[in-house]
Length: 384
Ligand code: NAD
Ligand code: MG
Image (cartoon, rainbow, N blue to C red; front, side, top):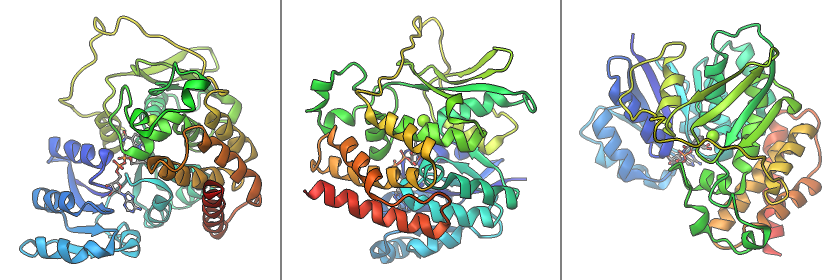
């Protein structure tokens, strides 16, 4: 039986690579729903090629253009945030791939879980903001959350066949980003152009900035807690500039398992679709004679304060990770518009954490209110 897949964010880096995976396995997968935020031309081209049942464009101003361009096809066309949240519940859908950016992924993910869809989760912000709520919903609805993030996919692959065996720790590898060797002095003046040049991965703008600032790794630490049920002190980050080892698990007998491969997101995307099976893939293989050096360093949380802030958020829990995420989204957008410096981002995030009221056991409504308030605080700090 073919699995029908809804891709939230099909025009992005993860979305387009997911379509390549689907294209490689037309007997196994079908793109049933495609969605985008703004890039209507790309969405039209994808719809013509993959002939999905439905497409959704979040930006309602682009609805007519999309509708007209697809008038000759039997594809349903919708627009708006509400449509996005509803489409994931369509009965035939088996898997929802959450490949949109940021907090906007939370509500559609919740709806998809409630409709008992398997979640292939790329949108890590959802787990950062509301990991406890998401886990609880997934438990109640007995639906799996399958990691797409390469580090978490690596850990997930290391855990296959280890049910019941105690994990001592998980070790997340980090490339260190474009500023790994920069001094604090040098970091003061780095530009968005420099930050957008990631050494190993070609990704969307937001996650590329998060990788340069190490907030991405901080978010992945929080993501690991919710995906694998490990304590903060069991989650270690090690800088590994070659990005050959995608992450590791150390078990209670001291054995360390690692997953290695080319830095290619199509593998973790495909594994989330095919789990527990593996499928043939045609993309390039790792050549050990060409990666003669694998090196490891401790991350520097003094130069990269975001990593320390994310650990603090993880320890304090409640709505603090939600505050950090909202402040970070505002900061990254401002940095991409040259309205804040690279190091200024950590200052604003830290101050926002201090100013927004702490809630120990947030409800969904509390997360929504926290997100709104934290964005407001972060914006006013940037405007000062
Ligand atoms: P991207 O910017 O390349 O693509 C984002 C996609 O989501 C686009 O299709 C866009 O139209 C859509 N989108 C954005 N905002 C939206 C909104 N408010 N409402 C509806 N749709 C919206 O981003 P990406 O690099 O593909 O990353 C997507 C997610 O996957 C992020 O959460 C990121 O952290 C995560 N992720 C990405 C990678 C990677 O290699 N790119 C790796 C690990 C995790
Ligand atoms: Mg990652």
